[in-house]
Length: 115
Length: 112
Image 1: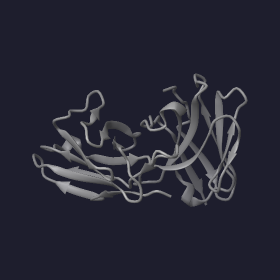
Image 2: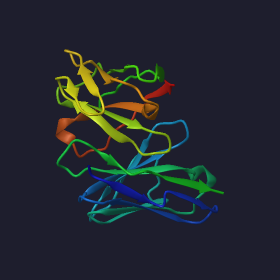
Image 3: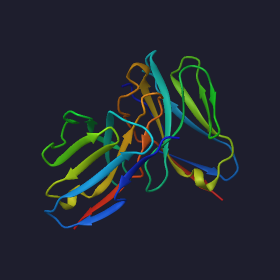
């Protein structure tokens, strides 16, 4: 099946710094990718929809200036957490769909810890 | 999207069948029923989906009630690797490219 990768798998950063997370569709093109956040013992919450060649669409309550999304190509979307704070520590997951199937493909997730 | 209701957790013994229920009483005619599961510290993975008829694949079976207001995911022989959170999600067939809305899911624990 289709594969979605994320890099890095885990990252620890200091408060106030920025962290970039990459999401790649390895064997298909995706005009749309989705970014989710998951806190411990909770479900996935959609943060934003990443659109290739246009601005991302953010869910209510998600600050677009803090969570910068760039969908530079049909196989790559990046999420940059700017000026990270400890409360941004979470599991960040991306997903994409080849468009030919109703099956959504998820990345393995990136665990961010802000100290 | 219409909402789904699942038990918070279920327990099963290894090598026994598991029936995971999902209620979706407000399902619309164009909603597909999707099941995903999330193993610990991993992203979700697709399990199965269906519209009206029961479905089988190598991972599981999906039994859909005649009125489509409920469905059951069936794992025929649970293994320890099936311990995960199972999410039942409705997705409008007309919006296949849209995001998935995750509810609380059912945490399945498998005892050896």
